[in-house]
Image 1 (cartoon, rainbow, N blue to C red):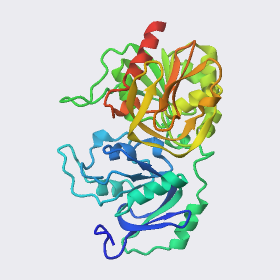
Image 2 (image 1 turned 180 degrees about the vertical axis):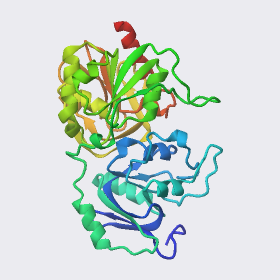
Image 3 (image 1 turned 90 degrees about the vertical axis):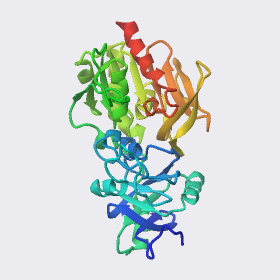
Image 4 (image 1 turned 30 degrees about the vertical axis):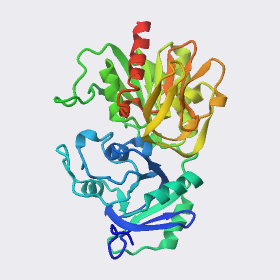
Length: 385
């Protein structure tokens, strides 16, 4: 039994196929059921757990040192953790970071998120890669009492993410303004002083750092809920429209997002820029299709090639669905492609300033390989004014 276990395991991860992993629980107690994915990033566990795109998922971290930098409120991508749970190799140790305000385990407990340590994450990751992202039940009980059969049954009963619209669960309740810019040493976050462009950002589960990047590119940002209509967007008289990241099945969210995007395009010639789910929403609005991936892309080391420049960017990704490049209609070109598996990572219209990418240019894994996309969006608004 690995040294990270207690004498009696206090957490259990049960997969729908009956595979059981026992370990040490930390964070909140109780149970949660979700799709299980893995993330290969070496840093950023706090940003990952608070990324709304992880709604409905339990995250397995392949890097073993999770928790060693503690928790820093400035690094939250939204107010609370959104991922359902956390699976790690080694139990979190005491943090060593001058910015840390609290410990990972305490933060998870206070925010109601369950975690399990002492797991063979290599074995688990290989299983996910081979069999696809499984449905799983995660339970934490300090007394170590688990009904294994019931947990497996709950995992099997989980409906999955296909057909599930989760954007409505993580979007903002009402519109708001955003003017905070990216963090910089030694001042921290700044404020956009003289914004040049009015941008409406549609919140399908927007990360704060995306909004900061828009502000840093000179945008005065108004954030609207995912359910906003084309008329509501245009009523703000924006210079451009941004489509955010988010969770769930893009086809489900597209039921109301696609008509909005199509309406904006029919009634205006505004530049449009999308990221992640926003990329998929734009593709659907233009007539393409999306497909569920075997295990998705989740990590901070994904090489993406820009067909138009020939450059390769190191990107951060988090998506379980992808745009089917074979379904792109005439007039829409593929601009970026994953060098891991050839899947689509970017599109643009040939005759309008409308474009999007699957990866996350705000996450800075390169570290600044992809920030040009925000500058491109700003330039397209400059050209129109």
